Every structure is written in structure tokens, then in C-alpha cells.
Length: 144
Image (cartoon, rainbow, N blue to C red; front, side, top):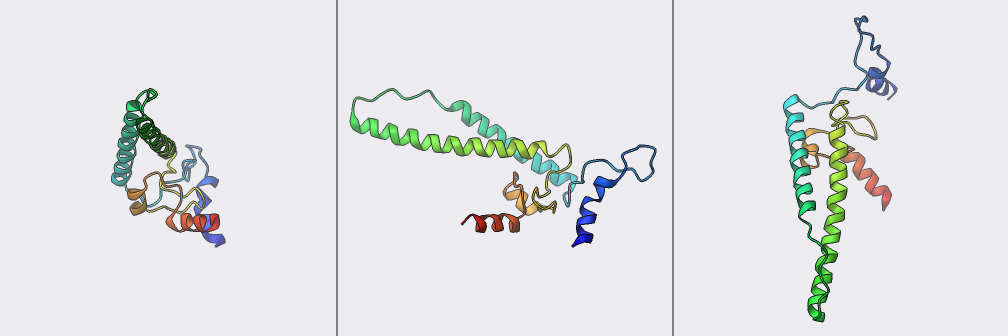
């Protein structure tokens, strides 16, 4: 366990002096993802971000008060659904922005909990994932 931990953080101990032949960048590598996979995942995140921004821009103004009680009830239900979707969209948008910020330092695809690679298949399904499937399941179990 200690050896694996040492390997995972060895990039932090390396010199960043360009004259040092063993110099390594001060950022960790993106584990287990090819350049093509990274490009695909970044494009997926960017496309989803644009969809959410467009949906946010389309949200109309507040509804006028309805004289008919049935119309008012329908409007209230619709508004409540829209607010729920809006909150969900905003949360996903923040997660996507967070994920996109991780590309430049090279930490995209690396678990924020353990530093382990998240895995391409998981990232294809949830490109803003912050942890591996096992870690997410463990967290969900702890929340219950």
C-alpha cells in the first residue's frame, strides 16, 4: 500500500528545474486516457455545457396570474417542474465547468478521493465524474 502511494505521488517530488535531466512537470499525468479519448470527453463536456446554457437562455419570463383555478394549478405544477429541472441543470453545469478546469493541469480522469484513474467507460457515461465507481458506491452506502 505504501509503495502504491509513493508511486502515485512521486510526480510531486520531482524537480521542475529545466536543467535537471530527471525534471518532470509539477502536475500529475492524466491516467489511462489517450489523447483521442481526452479530446472526445472534452468535446462531450463542451457540447453538454452548450446545451445547458441554451436551455437556461430559453427559460421564459414568469407566468402571469391565471383567473381560472385549473389554469393556475397547471401553471403552478409546470413552474415547479421547471424549477426542479433548472436546479438540476445548474448543478450539472457546475460539475461540467469543474471537469473542464481539470484538463489543463492534467488531473481530468483522476479520482479526487484517491488519485486513481477513473476509467474511460465511466467517463463516457458521466464525463464530470469526480471518483471511481467503487468510491461513489462507497460514498452512497455511507450516506444511507
